[in-house]
Length: 188
Image 1 (cartoon, helix red, strand yellow):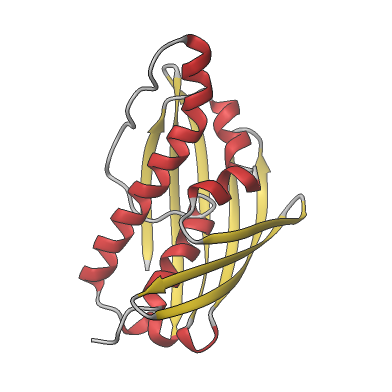
Image 2 (image 1 turned 135 degrees about the vertical axis):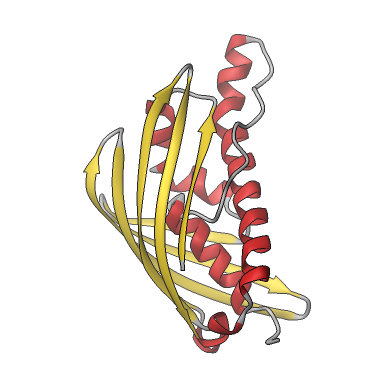
């Protein structure tokens, strides 16, 4: 599976970079995320719980960052496992560019899945991916733009472009959440 997308975030590039590298900000923006632990400057552990109906599963994942060029770009690799529910692994590239008073975040990710994850249809994947990405970016924009908007005494601008797919770390953590969701879907 290959996924790409971009989002206009209404805050300066340095703030977006800090947010993308702050485990507490990401944990607050990713539904079902129990923990994001910084193991080193380039490695994170992620624990997520997802429920669909009466089924609940805990997923453990690992993110490795590389090719860091603060505050412009980085690459990452990721893997996550939910036991019998399935697993996912892949890589992503994330880049930031100043655009007006905001930041254009672009990403490209490749992922492979196994177990129950591999049994889900592409139409369902696309719909779930859009919803998860929308939810993540809405929360991320509110988290970052809220304090800046309060300081300026104005309301935070609405999110920019809506052409979004799942991303991780923005590409990584979001994709792990997506994989958790897929693992819990009944086989069709």
